[in-house]
Amino acid sequence: MLSTLFKKKLSDDQLATIFVNGVLDAIDNGFQEVMSLVKEDPAFDRQPQTEHLKDGHFSMIVIVANVSMLVNSFESQQVSSLEELIKENLANVYGMDKMEFNNYFSSYSSFMSRVNHPSKNMLYAMSKAFFYKYQLNEYQDDYFRELSSPNPLFLKRMDEVMENFIWNWDAFFKKYKLI
Image 1 (cartoon, rainbow, N blue to C red):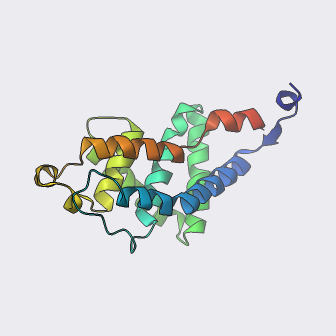
Image 2: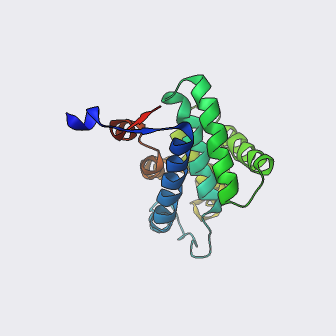
Image 3: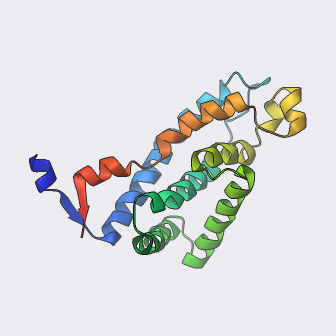
């Protein structure tokens, strides 16, 4: 009861900073675990070689998905403001100027939409983008490899994994209030 009365109040800038730090922390702490799960996935004929892979694609997939999902938790005017603040913070983190990061972000967003077409489900887009960006097709059995399409069983398991990287706004709003 008291926790609902005394929620910490945040500005949009503070919210963007917490969001960026939280998402990047989840990525940093989760990438190796995701790669271990991929390496052991029974959908592959051969074990994917994941040791040399970096988290860059994974980071952008998670970031794009989470920013794209802001519309589910905020009004459109606030979404625009938050997106700009988040992208500005991320540009600083990645040592890019804002325009360069926006282009990079747009490129990933377009790619995710394209590989997920006609579905609009962002969770599916994350799993499919991961599959293609990490070139996992070559490790599949002949049937799916020739189709150049991810095995649906792999995608289902990957959806469950990716769900862990979606920001939980309900939990966030139980603790914080926007000013």
